[in-house]
Image 1 (cartoon, rainbow, N blue to C red):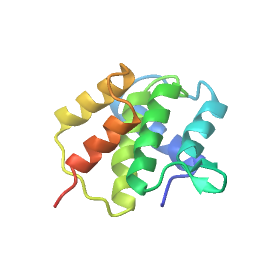
Image 2 (cartoon, rainbow, N blue to C red):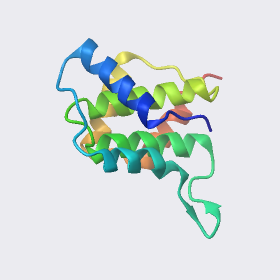
Image 3 (cartoon, one colour):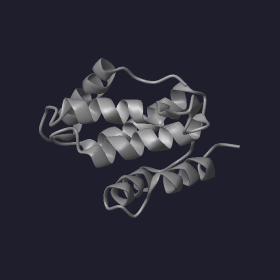
Length: 126
């Protein structure tokens, strides 16, 4: 699975904040690193998350709920979900309203990793 580096994510966050407003900066770099590495966890040499969609769901969930940035965690998590899908040729269709609802649902603990995975699969272009 193609992903973004820490530098890429920080650049993306900076662009999001410049465009939509809010506070720049990282609250906890270790939590950001953890969120970016979380999809690639293994146990006994086996991936915990078997396919790219599971990994993308975990990435988005972790970025949003780790609160690693001073501001824009939901925007960053949802942007990463969309961009990593695109990078990995997973075509999803959505409205802006659906993305907002998804981000808020994740942040309010109404959506877990499995719910995000289901959302991605339901929004995949046929």
